[in-house]
Length: 404
Length: 153
Image (cartoon, rainbow over all chains, first blue to last red; front, side, top):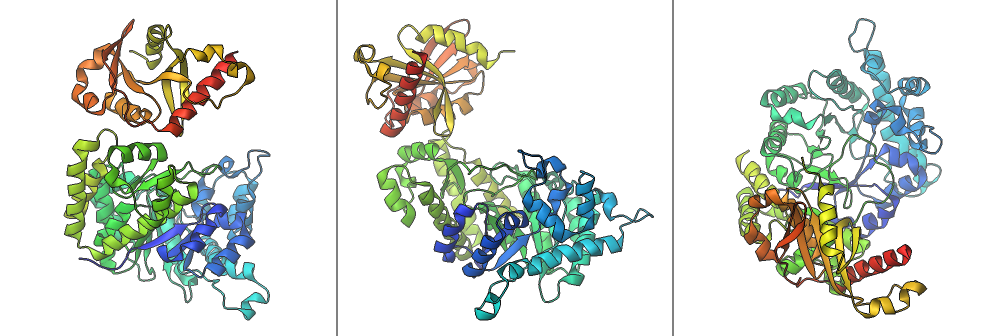
């Protein structure tokens, strides 16, 4: 069934991307910003979100405090980075205690003396995280401004505090679920979605999926975020892709929005299974590990619309010379490609056009049509273009979407 | 067990008589395992090496790029195909005992040559001239080779 355009949330990763958000406002639905990035550039990010007037969501990055503290420190002086020390001021005494003891947060930090989760501790942590999300932008815009002009200071949706877990018996699974449930007490007029952040191998077992879906049946939740760390839509096998599709389909029976935290075209295809939207950066963060990446701009990768994936530019140049019919004719490429290699700006703008186009295709075409097109592209081009490029993912996606 | 490094000395012996050689040559986000370049006669006579001048187009008669792998020929071919943007000829060098696994028709279709390496290196399938040479990429390789030569003094 054809349906709504999948909501595409752009992740703000580097300040240099801001002009692309501003100049291409019609090509995406909303903005997702990590709290650690917000705290790296608080005033400018708040002003940017306010001026942009698009729906925004703050990822509270609570999982980061579960990492070894060395990953949160600066290399030059081995002190906690400013962004995390700022977050610590907002979040609560558990994080303060962890920093003081130079250790990650443990499940025991949320347990009482009887070994069960301590509601008081869950309440305290959740209330602080939720308060941060609700008020941070507003307080940064601050002053008279909010009385003088209309502001866009409030998040579209609240993201419950979360920690990654390896399985449903991992203590963090229960803690994350309970933190999310407790958070609903503080949501007030806002919508609140829990984050299902679980190791991708979990998807291989249908009983696991059924168990999780049942656990997350809670009336206070208004939707769901899903993050499967290191899940690469291009390279995952049929079992894991099918598992993801089943998870989405089973969750969708609750009739609530489901947003993928990181994804690309397979996430768009999951809209046929009930996915409402997904997020990525411009040319990066379409998959994400739990590790905190170091600095440096991402290497320029060009989004190949026919493959629905990125390739380094030199691979694209060779691909286009092999098959000129694949050359993109979007407004950004039309001019750039006539002059040879596109600039980084062209590559980014091209990606936004290409993504907008493919989301429109998903919305306007029936599932069977999209699957047929994917499989036809695969069969037609594979004999001509392999091994120059890998396109088996098109077949895997088509098979999964057709059958789930 | 054969290591990739085992393949380099025989390749060097095979090409060094007629070509200048460089290893790990950068090409955009990649590094070409081996580049062999046959300089024009004027190359050594000209004074650009001494002056440090590197912007000299068409310095080389022929540039060959080689992707070295012990066994994984498909992965090697995928890499080698990108090198057709910057080299006149392109080869995949493999350890000889794995040659029986490869699809020679696939190499022929794309015009990529094959080198078998044991104690020696020998070309078992000639490379065709690349029809996809991109002046910008080739120039970047030429510049790198000249700079290397200058540094080696």
